[in-house]
Image 1 (tube, rainbow, N blue to C red):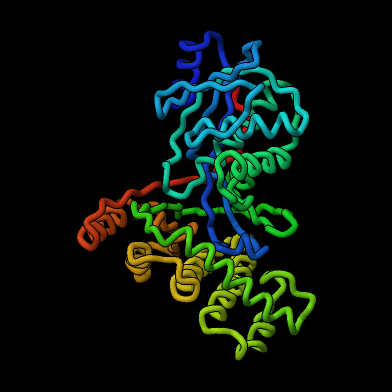
Image 2: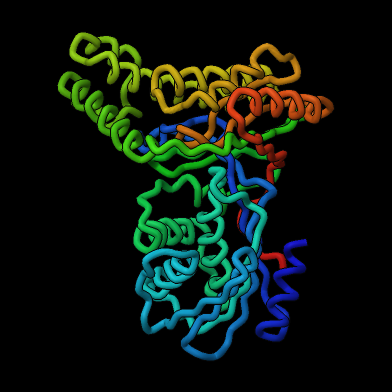
Length: 383
């Protein structure tokens, strides 16, 4: 157990028993590339997490040991400046944000490790930042509200890790609820929980183990294309401030003023928001078949209209379409690599994984990496 490793290593390095925090990774069930268009997302926390042990050390220094990297690093509370790179920036970043917010942080010792796969799009960095925030809040009896910790984690990512991320990853990791998906309104940050009663099915992630270099530049281009659509629609409908406000009728009314590419991008985002809202109703009704169909529709839109998929992702989704034991599948995340998320009958998972892994190996010469996940509680104190 990773928790035991954290406790044992903490005792070996620093002595004593630490306060222990669990902070999970996250998946996104549906609602991709909608966040920066002020739309909706439907993430959930998962049973893969980072575990962190903390104790005060009575100084102005902070000593941190990473089990995964088997490395110790340290920093002073008097000099919180981002390093060029490295995992320590995530810990320093959150600590700096807490101090800037006026919280009385003192020196601490920390050991952390986890089982969130790195590079699979499951938000290990958000989990780490949330874990540090909650750990220090608990350690120094600060009682910081969870939503404030989410915002502090996001600021840390922006300023210390140098990634201008949205808020979904931190929000889902912190606010997750066991057995539920979390619908987040990316404009208002209002959220609601929906039951994820999978019954005879389970969620399986298939990691393509590829990351095409198109990612960052394509992401920026997509944002610009969406903004072009918004600007065009707003010229006729001044109340529009983002694609969240644009209806399909509005978009069709300016069709002649838009390039095919911009029209497709906007069409996808508007459709995806509606798909997500419909999917929440399906979950409330326990209608997994309709939810699965929405996953496939989401992937078609991401691949054909938003054009952020790749051959490997398309192959994995296409392989499942005619299999009755798979209710739904789609790419998850920014695209151009990463994972597909699949809803598969539990008693057929092993068979499906064996067959799809062999087919993927033959097609691309890559060993597929599967992850079976269950939905868990968000960031929390364990001991």
